[in-house]
Length: 123
Image (cartoon, rainbow, N blue to C red; front, top):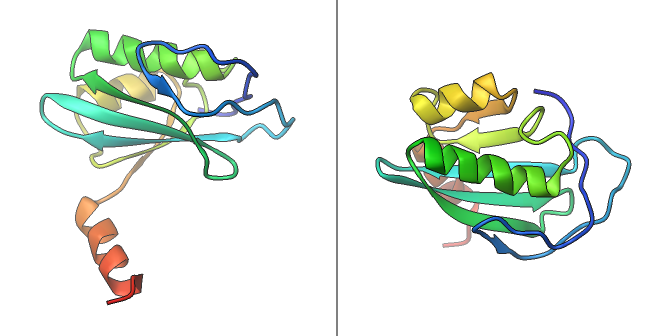
């Protein structure tokens, strides 16, 4: 789970490509967030500037993981290897597959995010 390189272009794999960045030389130029659910997962990939690069909804099975892998591979030579991924759980088949593929997974408690948002947003 190490580094990624952005590739220029607009290739999409069953997802909505919002913006494409050019190669920067910085190895950590993409980040991924996965909104985990029982039957499907919503995926968002952002660049170093916080710009949404791609988003997709994937199923909770091999086909969904394949779709995620194809999406990230279309954006990076390294694929999932080294990609920082924030996800709402630290367990399950998707998390195991991400670890096996070399992604850097970060389990984020959704309640902590909600409480942070409530604390720092204007009333």
